[in-house]
Length: 313
Image 1 (tube, rainbow, N blue to C red):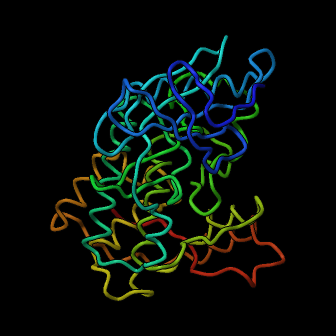
Image 2: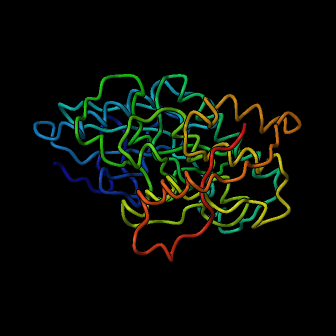
Image 3: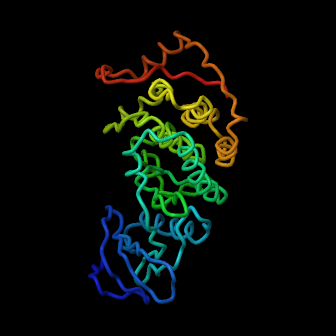
């Protein structure tokens, strides 16, 4: 695996500054006179002769970015060959990270709805390709002058293609605070998985709290299967009922009860008057006891929220 220094050139891109990076790739600010927008180069850590899963992930991300367009996704510039130097060159989005915006939560309902609309617009473009993001979180969203921009498609996968990653894709992928129940269970994800994460983000913006905390273990992540977060209006009574209804529908444990696609939540966020606000049904204690017996751990004292139940649409 080659290492690069500032000043190095790759296919006409000059590396200017190394950016904070994760364990899968290095990120570089770069310039290229062919493009009239700032560039970031993503250079994956992989050995083309050995790391099959990393190669598949790189190719998937390259394909996704090539096909995406719109104000709420970064512009694609170019990519490098696996046989030479693999890289993805894309727009360097200038703005404020949504993770910083979360620090100012709770936000007014209209601002939460605006940010949600912009993220959902990006997800709609992604889902039209039959692709799911799988790692939607504030750290992967930038608030630029043109609005929210969705970043980092490194975990994104085609929702309908055969599973090419085998057992590696059956373990939870994503970030603990926002991961959907089906991701926790290692089941196949679909657009509803991203909409669960979107609901978690908007809940956090509206209330100032993470709906499920940040569990460090698989057992901790499984708690969302049977224990719902606190009602948003119990935390912040300024939240309108229509927004609470949207958040709760996004975070349904049963994905068939969530929004089917991003276009549906877009419609509700843009037209709050059409949102159906229904009273929650009383919890069936017998069912709750049976479910609890499957998942309850010795550290139940740390549980917050209330028992989860099926919600009416």
